[in-house]
Amino acid sequence: MPGITQKASCSVKRKVTSSPSAATTPNVLMGDHGSEM
Image (cartoon, rainbow, N blue to C red; front, top):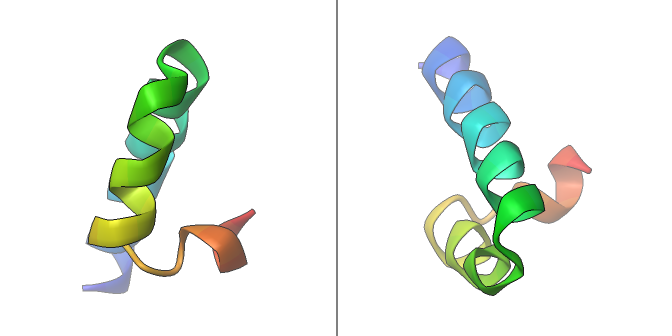
């Protein structure tokens, strides 16, 4: 499971970089996006 989470957060970061409005989505879905950064 941890591996899947890392891959998901990695792709999420890339999406956030291209679309700022999506920055709120990973925070709600992942929850640990703040700790990742």
